[in-house]
Image 1 (cartoon, rainbow, N blue to C red):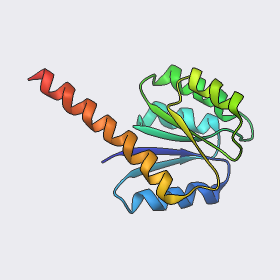
Image 2 (cartoon, helix red, strand yellow; image 1 turned 45 degrees about the vertical axis):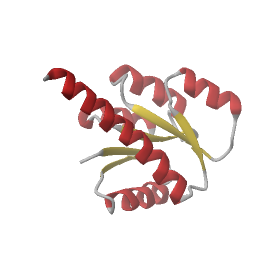
Image 3 (cartoon, rainbow, N blue to C red; image 1 turned 90 degrees about the horizontal axis):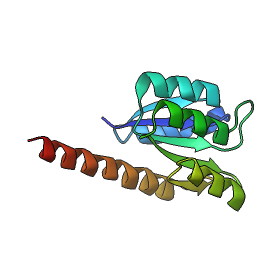
Length: 132
């Protein structure tokens, strides 16, 4: 079962995305702030994180840096209401694999998640073949 973490300070966004991906067989964790997200990453090791940039307390960029310290291999897609190129460049420099903009369009969100989960499956399959 694929493990996804959704981090957004808007509970409605977390619930919406959680419900959408749980219906597709994902195990979905949610966090309402960066501190909670880092704790979940330490405990649950999700394959992919959807991380909002603008949140109260620790913002998404600070949370991304902390997540990278805990799990440098976890894939992170940033979520933003505005396309701020400087923030996106900083996020990529910190290890984010991409970004999506709000409002979240389900087709695009699903494609972004599935493409990156599929890449994880392919890498695991290659590793398993090499172990044989």
